[in-house]
Length: 297
Image 1: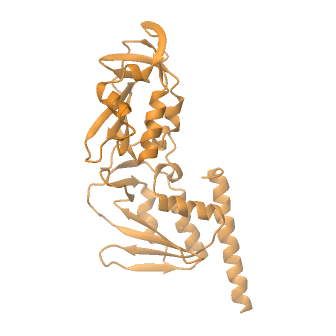
Image 2 (image 1 turned 45 degrees about the horizontal axis):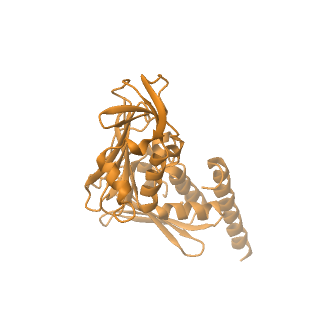
Image 3 (image 1 turned 90 degrees about the vertical axis):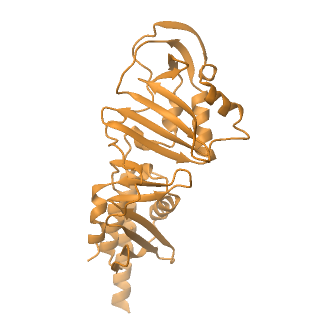
């Protein structure tokens, strides 16, 4: 998203406030849970411990396991369809998926840039990360693992450099950026945020409860601002594969001034995003999501 969160906050409040003022003038004249991500660490930082064995630098590709060698050898004809980023720390295990050729190729390129500079025997039980490559049938076809930022491959632990590309990958929640701006890869949400950022007005907001429940619509700019802000500035604290339950499920629909509608799904206190198969539905939890239906009176 262009600009900072605060700049966007000012943008949407200003645009909606202007729309509300204009409307008033016109009337006068005539918006598998998993473990918490709070303990996730930036990925991966080289260990501060010196390697026990050093040698001339060489590409990490030379030491990767056979399954990863096959992925690189066949990436032009048999690319995995998705990649999952796993973080295992004191808070437990958290997994974040990314789907599509761009995400997979970006991950492969970042790994290919890594350089091995030595070996070490330093390990930690609560500081591991990994990239899990998924085929179209849902099977795991390759894994690249790190411990304390060191590469694990072929039964050895390698000290590595040039890992900066990993921090640009599409798994931002793992880097302590838990806000909805960077966590949820829903293109519908991104378009909505972009249009709000551009100052487009929102005509109405509707909350519809699941299974024949009540539907409430408001054109009040106060309601719209409150509902849009509660969504846009939510801080995601959990993420995981949806378990199929739909406790307190509801939809929120924003209708823009040009009539375009943006509908977002919620259940179990989470934003629900449906990745293409084989990833499937994912839940992004924020405690404030439970209160969204109550914003419109």
